[in-house]
Length: 327
Ligand code: AAM
Image (cartoon, rainbow, N blue to C red):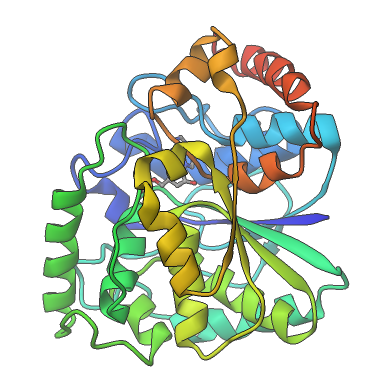
């Protein structure tokens, strides 16, 4: 199995109170760069911080790394608009960081990014791939494109108390600034991304579209951000089989809505519970309290763990957290 991790940024993450994917707003731009270093090396290398929430919950990259150390999988990192340098080897598709969605164009080069990502996806030699993401603010931009497409339903959050009303306000402002109303982008997913999305979206949507077209099975590894990608693919007229693999933390928060949305988008849904309630380690306690919930391919990675081996993942996560200075 190859995991493709699309790592990017959007200025949208800087909107007050919208994201916990970094200890402080000025650190969020480093989160994706550090996340991919954790996946590759086990710890940040040139990145100055280990991404944690303001209350100290470690990045989901720690969990994905722990799974990787236990079961092993091929990994490629795609630069989907990084704002800070990273020492992780990345595939360069020329993607730029995203602009605040409340500006007229949030992803000015969405079309060109999609095309390059498509060619990359179509060139992959793998029979199956999983695609994950790291982009602070990504649930707000997910709500942006879902609304522009006219898709009902909400999105999750890295915060235990989802600031969904704030997100709706931001999306309303963003649509108005782009002279759009909810549902206006029904048949034009790239217009939705350009107006109110983030650069990870055309990257993941393009890779998935190219991979599916060339006969590669695709699992979208993530929560509501990946549901938004599934919606973008369906609105692009792609009807190939598609799966979403997420965590029990997202599924618990979203309730029946997650399965209903996946059903409507004709996506298979896999939910994996890592059994963190069996541990009294501070990181796992924070996940059980609803922090972070998903990201950096966590739900997809957990779905690769064979029955009976989740205890090993939890043990390994403690080692990864020790290395990251989280105890
Ligand atoms: C990615 N890196 C993270 C992290 N994520 N580091 C710490 N905490 C997280 N939750 P929101 O829209 O609330 O910002 O949530 C989306 C982000 O949270 C994404 O970057 C996702 O990968 C995760």
